[in-house]
Image (tube, one colour):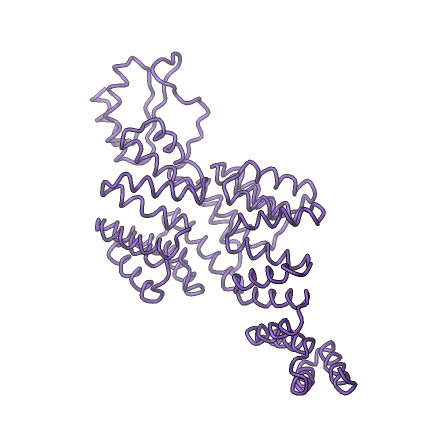
Length: 475
């Protein structure tokens, strides 16, 4: 660079450092008109435009600088700019390109964060293995490892990694978060509540932890505590966080039987985050309880606004199932799966209408496909178990059916301390029999109580008050 251009560059850099961005931009552009391939000027002008809120232009300028001269800092800043725009695939591509011929710890961290955000946990674990060879052990990396292990269905290894992270840094919020998720996955919601309370105590401003505490209270069955926790938080300014909080409040309202309040919260959440499949699904589910025909209309609007979104087709399919249009429901849910083939919630939904149509083999294939993605997904184990029971595969069927109280439980576990019954050969004491999934199931399965009586087993039966008369007359 000749002396005149060097003078322009130094003036631009001085203005940039002083925060006089308009002057700095003028100097950078003057220099680039005379030397359009000056990598440093392209890079710094890109950073300046990023500071001014023009991320797309900034990305193009830094990319031009990289074409002139590959530099680790250029790659790092390009990936950061792309990440701010939510372009995670571009971040991954940029980081891999940079790491292909340059050494950069920051690029490794950016790549790891992007892989975790897109849900590529196997690749993230491979990267963590490589980083472990060049970096000292840290709580942050161990917490990342714990998250990845949990997501690929290795809960024991995940718990070990999270505990190791906490041994290095007892204030590692990410490690506490993984342990809380592990507790929820195995149905230990009391433990999850304790961990999220620990997180909230240590990090009072961690909104996600406070929301998860409320959700854990819901899973524990304490809707009032969930509502108290979630309603104590002011609505944050960030639209995404505000929508998440409103969604949590809606769940608490629904558990408390305040359906109208739940509906208002969900509509407010969708106004803040109109593309959210989760909030749309929750609103559609709420409407399916109130008015299945209207739920179909709501889902139809969602498809019209985003025809390539899996959420709308999922909601539509579930509403069709509710009005017993099972074939149409399956067709709509197949479209949702085609749009989001690795989403376990989307995959799992099609199992129910397939089962009711009698397509048992395809139903089991579907549930196994879900479990291949997430071996800890309780609804799929439960669904698979019910089909296996239907087809006479009793041993495996009951094992799957036992998952109904785990994770996002299908039914609330009871706090009994007695051991499970092992059959008529077990002697001593009385057998406790209780209703689990509503009056309809009590009517159906109550027909087995006379068989139990004839076997000579002493039993104490808990049932809905409306069944006392029929059961008393039958026994």
